[in-house]
Image (tube, rainbow, N blue to C red; front, side):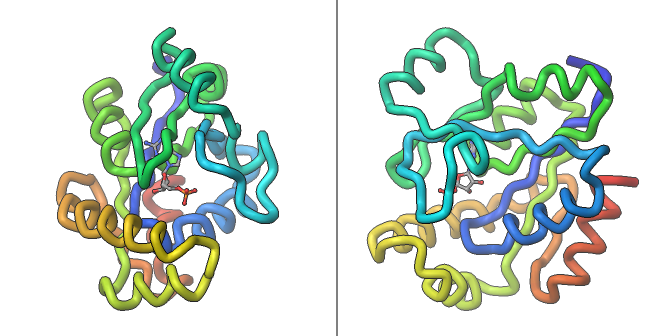
Length: 184
Ligand code: 5GP
């Protein structure tokens, strides 16, 4: 796996990564390959197996993890998440820009195994804004929101480990910065 460009996007849950990445994929459908992760969490309303995630049981995930089939994996808010190598190796060989949207521990693993990967951090304007975005989207239980805010603090504190930080305050400004970082 050496030809394509591997880009890691990390940022707290609720920061707006999903919206930014969706815009980017819509604008550059042929250049960008978005890696579909596997997870043991349950699908949210509207999510489909094989589209947002590969929804695997913990036993299936652990069996594949133990067989070395993940580029990286991590436990987040009580569930496992990981990037199956099979999903991205072909796209990298074909020279496409491969985007991984993953949390901090996974980003650190990729920094070790793929030092040439560009790592981008998406930051909220403040923790207060992040909390209200998480509560407004009402996809997660209170318990999940508390876990996600705790993780968010750890992630924001690690922002300077990344090559680039983009503050998602104004969506258009953040999108322009992301586009510059990914495409050019
Ligand atoms: P969510 O449950 O909100 O979809 O995702 C929770 C967190 O898991 C997000 O920070 C997301 O970036 C991260 N995540 C999603 N897929 C992966 C993956 O394959 N590996 C790792 N390490 N984190 C992931």
